Length: 304
Length: 333
Image 1 (tube, rainbow over the protein chains, first blue to last red):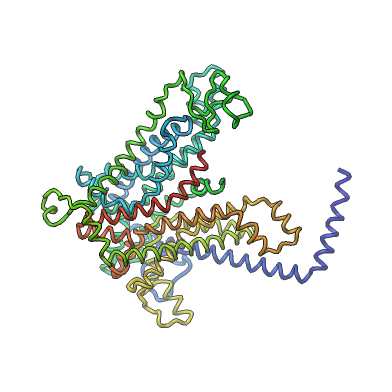
Image 2 (cartoon, one colour):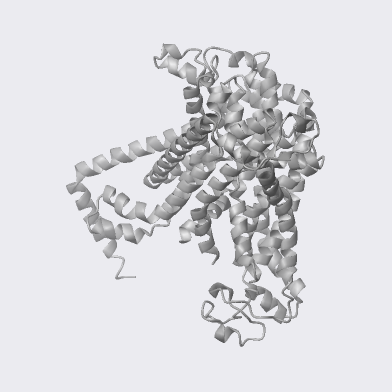
């Protein structure tokens, strides 16, 4: 203690001397710090502006949106745009469709991917490496390179415009990444914990259910939210698999809402209210999982 | 075999020898030893666990891929629309599509669009990541939250907002341009000219993709040990030297993966273009590969031709994905 305490003031004095000697350089450094800070704030504003503008326009009366000078602050907030959108009725139908597809996809993905992740992270078996390799390649296949064949497949089994058809396609598209993500979580729970519980008299199943499963909960939540986001936001596959007007999901509905509005001069307030309604649940859920998604996508690079 | 080898044995990554003597311990997974037969757990368990996932992948992806290969060698003409079974035509579809200049125009446009967007995204993302390192914590947190909000936006909502921002009559962009002196921009219709159409598309894609790149690269930059930079400073390295000789080389693996992912993702851009075309753009001059396939298949009912182009896109993706998949496999070892 006593040896460290007197050392501090002398260090401080040395630093003072140093700054005084390099005063111009310190000044320049301060200017640079302020400039960088301003640049950071500017970048933040640029990236958040479209989101802000969407929400702001959604609450702005149509008369102000048509004005030649835009309003940048919510001075005349109204919820008329939202009630107009909800009155339309199509929204409820699309919401029902999106909810059904999303829930089924999340459920199927969680169960299937969890079992798959368990298999590849707790066992070494013949074909394991090929399976992992196949999964990683499959997750890269673009929907844009497959949707015509998927359309023909669904139409041949009469599953166009059906919840089941889209759910099968979404489940297959989301499973590879979720297996990969969950594999990390399962591998992160040391099997020694289970072994220890078994030494204490639990059966293997009991040990798994009571010890391992609770520890995997965060991983399952993250995977579930990921599947939710994919199914809720998806546009391309839905466009071909749900051709009829009566079976739209929310993204398709938003597109048609804008097109329909364009015929009589777009009412941007209502269109932005519609966008906001779709975006809000997504933004909330997204903030839960984003850390996992960043690290999951580039983890190989960080380690290698 | 299970991971549960080496109960309490510290030499976890060592050879299987000592671990195998334990009662419950067999192969050590980390070393990649071949599995030893095990009595308590039948070896069929992992296969059974994989069945649901494999069935889903077969139904949703593998079967369509197979069907696509079949479709690509079949003719879908007028007779087929009236219920005739498609006839086998060999490689006719490929020959027909790939000798058509229209396809090559789309390919060239897609490649240029992809490269410009991917490079721009990574350069801007890297700049923002370095900026986050340089600024104070409150500024950095503000920037991170704003990037996350942009990243979280559903794609369709994002494109819709940009259409509103670039609206020719009451959009903010034209208002701002007129305000700073570009009077000619009053009422300018961005989406009806191919050049400005792609400018808007690039803005949307860069805006949507930069958050992921910036946050990934920032995570990579913070993992550079402070002692290394400290040592460089003591040796008299300037800020620029630290950047070029320490920071960038150390984040190079993340940088290359992120660039590769952007190239793969930007090559498949479809929905953004499709949604922007709704505003009345000249479709044939603004189609990218995905849009070309969609138009061939869904509008012209030329499923054979669409399948042929799709196979080309899939092959290109698999080729480009190889380094990325290899880097992920490294982690799995």
